[in-house]
Image 1 (cartoon, rainbow, N blue to C red):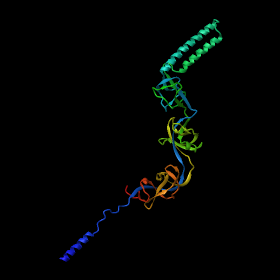
Image 2 (image 1 turned 135 degrees about the vertical axis):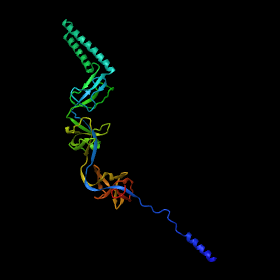
Image 3 (image 1 turned 180 degrees about the horizontal axis):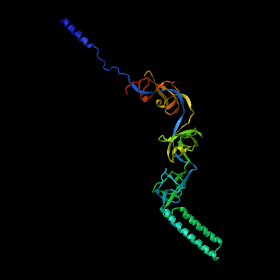
Image 4 (image 1 turned 90 degrees about the vertical axis):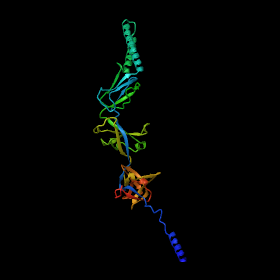
Length: 347
């Protein structure tokens, strides 16, 4: 009986000492899926893209001006319309105030004409002097000029193009009331077209006359390279930009008021190591990239230089041939394992 009890105790001890399975097995180390590019030896320059529009040259525009306060009855030729000499662009009708002026001017002109005729008759009878007749004649001429300057006869005034060209800078629409002397549109003469681009004031200071600039329509068509012919450092109060000017070749077949895009270099070209711009990361002013070696991404501080297109120069921190992360870098941590897309990894 004692031997049986001892055997039972030994069996219980063996069961209690058995190793339990690990409830938290080691998890596989995370691996990030990235795309990479290569640090290469090449040249770069600091380029900027600017936007602007075509406009008539300084000597090739004529203004259409409201001669009196009026209401725009209709716009016959909107901005961008090609017109011939004498073609109607805008039709005006007098405002209520101008109607009163027209009526008064007509009455004054008729009274002045009557006074002049009376002076002529009195001079023939020797009752007034030649000076009196001349004074009456001048008063009649002034009254007629005042009526003519109102410009609106028969209840309407057609503003016509003084020469062939393109309508631009149209400032009013039907129903608008405009003051006397308001410029409602300009007509640009053909063959004298330029473009004005807005640039940062600091950039304008780094440009020079004759500098090449690549221009195109905003859709990428009508590409050509021209030279800067004017630099205006005066800042526009609305856009806060300075202006540069170029002449538009006739071969581009553009009209006034068409939007354009341009690219120009604002720094000297230099040689060195360049990487895809998408590889460069920033953390509170610290510039860095992730360099991939043996499947491990390591954070590397760099000193960036000029950019050119989709690449940027690296002045310090990389060697030619270094493989840098171009996609997926924002989710990486220093020392993380990575798999490059296109190297057999499933996407």
